[in-house]
Image (tube, rainbow, N blue to C red):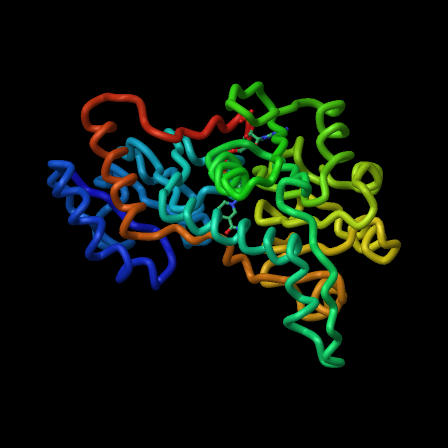
Amino acid sequence: MTTILFASPTDWPAYAGPLPAALASAGIGARIVQPGEVAPEAVDYIVYAPSSSLQDFTPYTGAKAVLNLWAGVERITGNTTLTQPLCRMVDPGLTEGMVEWVTGHTLRHHLNLDRHIVNPSHVWDQTCTPLARERPVAMLGMGELGRACTRALTALNFPVTGWSRTPKDIPGIPVLHDEDGLEQVLRQAEIVVTLLPKTPETENLLDARRLGWLPRGAVILNPGRGPLIDDEALLAALDAGQVGHATLDVFRIEPLPAAHPFWSHPKVTVTPHIAADTRPSSASNVIAENIRRGEAGEPFLHQVDRARGY
Ligand code: NAP
């Protein structure tokens, strides 16, 4: 059985050790090849990064699944040459990374850490900050990552309210839906975290009208996808003081162009899409488990509903 890795040049050495080891411990004898090593029709599974050179899946007539290395799938869901099941990456290592990024940036704003870190005038400012229990957080997206971040923030006593497409029953965490729910979530949020996929329904979700629902000075953390937020509306809301700060990890165009106003805006922090990377050591186990399932005729884990877009 043959698995091909279509990814970035650095991914091959990163997976060369962990992936064969994970397959072996799942009891699978698989040959792992790089592009060009075998005829496309001989490939059984495609381990895939959407940024790779493979965009036409037509020649891969024997492939049983495409196993995405990324959590986000918006660059592949519309590919009409892809007829096989598509699975997205849910990787414990990636989730841990996202929890750390969201918790770190939440605490930065909650504790107003910049006030003491950047203090050129040596101001002795002893203003007391509220406790976490007094700082409501909105978690837009209650999937793998939103739920993990919610657990971490609630462990620190932040009152988190979630928002998702479908109902969730999470003890102690209200999760709202639809437009009315979104308005309710945003109206009370001092910190908003966006962990939604990019789909036609979520594009420009945070537009001028919805940014206007936030309490004045609220902070936005966007590690989801750039198009979730209307850039122009966000800049206007920052300039007007409606939004106090935006910490953005993802952008409509990446790398963020040098002339983009986000780079120089005093109320914007840019991080270069580093919130959460797939970790080969843990992701290899997820890939191996899905190949095992494929071979055993069992349902794949994390299969994408392409019509839904995530
Ligand atoms: P997930 O498990 O698929 O969860 C997505 C969540 O979004 C679900 O709660 C879903 O609702 C909700 N949702 C989708 N469409 C919606 C809509 N129209 N209205 C309301 N809620 C909606 O995805 P995940 O693993 O948590 O990842 C979330 C996103 O994070 C990814 O798609 C990717 O874009 C981003 N990401 C970024 C990085 C980074 O480094 N910056 C790394 C990994 C992932 P239901 O629960 O009702 O389905």
